[in-house]
Amino acid sequence: MPSCRTLALVIRSVEVFETSLVVTLFTRELGKASALAKGARRLKSSFQGGLDLLSVSDVVVLTRGSDSLDLLTESAPIERFSAPRTSLAALYTGFHIAELLADLTDDHDPHPRLFDAARVSLRHCGDADARKRRLARFELFCLRELGLLPTLDMCTQCGREIKIVGDLVAFGLASGGVLCHECRPGVSHVVLITPEELDAIRVLSSPGDGWRSLEESSAASVAARRTIGLVLSHVMGKRPRFRPLVGV
Image 1: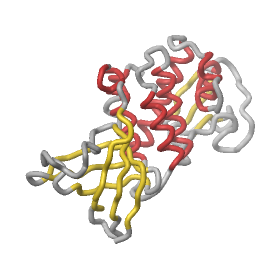
Image 2: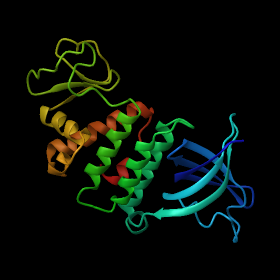
Image 3: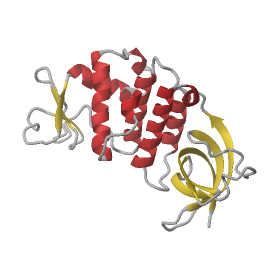
Image 4: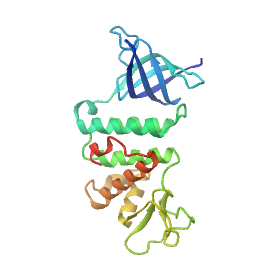
């Protein structure tokens, strides 16, 4: 079995047998991996406390080419995020990030930029003033990195530039983005959003610091985060468990 040393974020942990754990890791080099950590629950475990949930560790994974679990042989803690240990909202934010990584990514499909983005988001999830906007940015970045980001400027059906007619814009959850006036009829799973809400989603999904200018409690910002939640629910086939607890 080939081995790989990589940084890993622990996103799930299940006790098995008397002394072991099955952990789901989102690693920088391998992507998502489920691995057996033999003896991890022993008092004198060789894993040195490196398997705490929502922490980053330096791990060595022996990968298997079949559907069998990988084998975790080494783990040493690198970074423990303080906010999820002191704030319930920050903890739920961390759980939501872990759920997205677990449910939206495939095994052994590496996304190093997504790993880095998750790490940065967890570092700053204690910032109550920007938590909701920062989480929405991570959600959109996750969708972009996985090729699932909705089309925001061109009609997802015909590819023409969107020209806003009236006070609302058609946004197709199933079709994958905004719809022009001509393509809207007959398309299912459509929600209507305001131009201001569409602009807020564009700002949240764009690089740079423009998102900081959005007011957390403005109508457009709140509505944008709600629409992002609808997109996630459609892509995942279920409502994210912890997102409502964050108050997004």
